[in-house]
Image 1 (cartoon, rainbow, N blue to C red):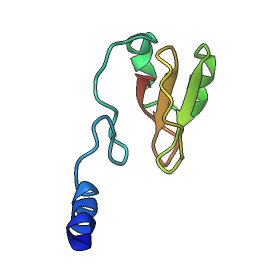
Image 2: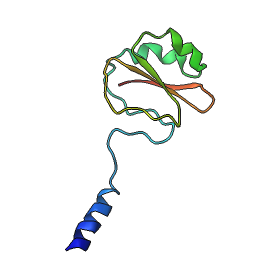
Image 3: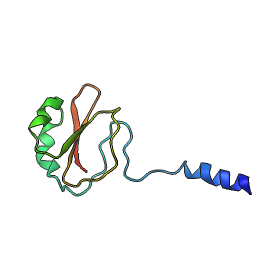
Amino acid sequence: MKYTILAGLLLAGCGTTIGTTGGNAPAAKGPDTCDAAVHQGLIGLDAASSLALPEPKRLVGPTDAVTTDFNPARKNIQLDDTDTIIGITCG
């Protein structure tokens, strides 16, 4: 019995997680609640270019830990390892 429960727990960890991104990939498309589409021209520019964006915003590097709270008005500025903007999403 205890092996069945242990096997079930191990297999539960093998499932996919909905809504996550792997590595530097941009998050899945969702509603544009923060006007991210307006700022797509910043992609490819240095992170300093995002300073002019209105709050709320957060810059997220490839190794940065971020909270999982969802704020539909917040712009997430995704950066690569050279601090170049690679994506802008809402959340």
